[in-house]
Length: 608
Image (cartoon, rainbow, N blue to C red; front, side, top):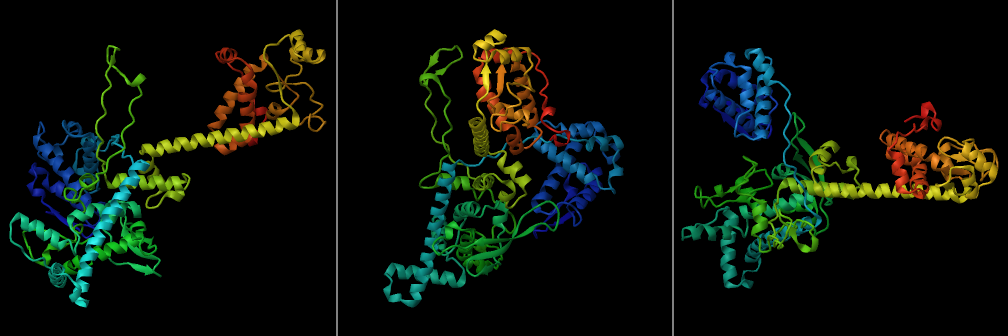
């Protein structure tokens, strides 16, 4: 027997003696004890179950292997390879089982008991299979979900507060109650005093009437999905943290509550985190995390008193065993956090009077509303299917709230990281979310457009002071250049290359158009100068420069690149190349381009 005592006060016992392959029992028991014991790395009940599952799968596989390794000394590389290649098992389960058994056998007390070749096969690096990414909700889905959760939670609050009000009126003003109200108030007063729901007659109908009667004062299973969904949406915490919310808290001047929540992480002594939640004004409890937390304590106060639990979530359950006693009050998440079959937020969303539906998927664009069959002939348009129910899970809610917070903070991950690190926030919540990726692409596109426009404005400002470059795309000979409007001497020198600089030509280096003195500007400033001359012969150099600037963009930050090279890059692309035909530019691109010559404008120590 291997006992587990978790840091979350949950316990379990695993009987290795019930497994097949008895020759492996001593080793498996010791390995499991080292893994889930006080010094092991597994500190949660769910983690211990995962370790036990891997151990069970290993023993079951060995009992059916051919040949069967009756003892650890008989294990071979082929056995390990076959365990990883089990048919009918998902890739994720194969990976987790293999990784878990490697960790269990890796202890220094155990590693030497396996043959060397088997251990070598067991510890080899494995590629983790990709799991289906969890995408968040669209803005419309998110708004409908939080509105529905608030509406149903408000209905729960009104129901329980109405029951409490009946009890109050029975004591303070019994004569003001109607006969039916007086009778119900008397029953509720007895329930409040004893914590017991009276037994009724009628079999299955009795169970239903008892549940309705209990719901006047207590939360039931049916109330939990809406409450948990709203808590996840408002507090922006994961499901495990919410299920283990404590009763103990501290009020900070009626403005906020301070409590210690469980935040499971790998490793010990990193489980607990102190959070401060805003209470907000009266009447806005469903909109603030602190207000909603205090409201939850109010709704569960009577069940908690009857059960003696310190958990914030305490409910009444309609069970045959202990019916009519305080045993029916319990904290559902103290023993097991799952209860997935009983608490389904997806079923709650679909069973509402106004069910929640997912946004329709965008239809494929077809010509004139038609679709093409395999033969290419037009077929009748297929009618779209009905709306799909909205799947409500903690993962999707967490992804959505993290994405919305990140967007509100302009995409700055260190500021947006709340209950996780920035790396975990990006990898597990933002990157898989399709809506976030679309938003990020829009932000990047807008930022690049703004940066390009700023560079163009800088170019236009410089041109306004210094004049616009002269581009003569169709002239090469002195005669053609002279016909284009250049003086004869300038046309001859330009055709001979005597005026060439790094990438263009300069018609008067000694007469700067803005200062009147000898030019000492960078060659990158030539593209904003009235002395600049560009002909077809300069096109290869310009394209080579653009290629060099593109390579430089990969080596430095966007801000630094746009500040240093942006105006020249925009001037070449939008002002100079635009005066050549696309065919001329493409023809030059097909040939080897010259070096960018960026060393002419950057000192060696200033290279990024």
